[in-house]
Amino acid sequence: MKYILPVILLAIGLSNCSKKTIYPLGVFQEEKAPVAPDYSKSYYWAALPNKEDKADVTPKKLKDEQKNAAVDVFFMYPTIYTGEKGDDQWNAPVNDPAFNKRVDESTIQFQASVFNGVGKIYAPRYRQAHITAYYEQDKEMSKKVFDLAYEDLKKAFQYYLDHYNNGRPIIIASHSQGTTHGIRLMKDFFDGQELQQQLVAAYLVGIPVAKDQYENIPVCETPTQIGCFCTWRTFEEGHHPKSFVSEKIAVTNPLTWTTSEDYAPHDLNKGGVLRKINKIYPNLTSARIVAEKGILWATKPKFFGSFLLKTKNYHIADFNFYYLNVRENAVLRAQHFMEGK
Image 1 (spheres, rainbow, N blue to C red):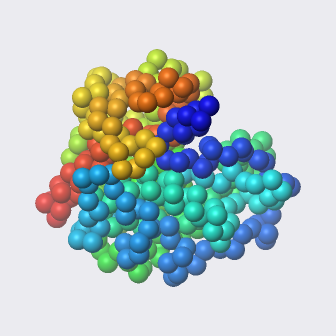
Image 2 (cartoon, rainbow, N blue to C red):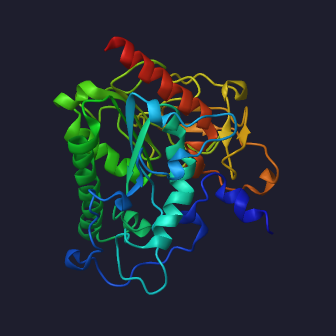
């Protein structure tokens, strides 16, 4: 039994899945929400280029290139907030050291670190929505919960622009709830805006993004295209999820970086990361776009204990199955952006 949990959690420590989900007590009340983050203080950033944090780590033989990077990466992390017994908050407390540690040791270490080979990483802490807000029947309340979370990220990004960016090229990266908010952030700051000229690319992963989501920002069609967005949601090959599927949902193949439905075999996968950040698993899995569903299929990965992996939804490892491919593609797009500039 001791191997079951690490196998299922796969890649990012996944505090959001390693703890039992507990519904918050009562209803959302904005006036009782956790204290808002102050982005002038480094404490409220899970990652900053000028401080030591989990976004600095790399698998063996890779190097953290943030110090000399010409590009910035603004990273929005996924849902980690599942609550504790007795909690009455619908939004995460950013002053809770234990919660922040869960964020840092999971998504920041295993997802944000993908991008330390290309840019300086900025990852704000935010009062993210409790995971059950996605399933809450009171949609009006749920919207308020997500709006509060987004307002934090919006303020963080504006603070980043005002104090850190200095006109540098930008990569937007996000996963799951981070992408829920990233979709809005792209619309508010980039789509048809002057800042779009600074956009290298966006990696909006783990949440459905419509092909026509933006008026001026297309889906990435080639590995070197800039000013576009990449997106995918990973399931075991042959699995057909019943919800959130549509031919209108954009999908990028993270092995070929096209929208073609051609099968991309294992040997195109330069390496994924599972439970230990320092170990790369080459040829970990394949990738195939199922356009009519708006999803990505991956063959079941093989590793010690993988026979215990029963889930067919690989959402948890959207980035990690393709760790090196994403890392190298971000570098490639940044190079093309700088050459064009």
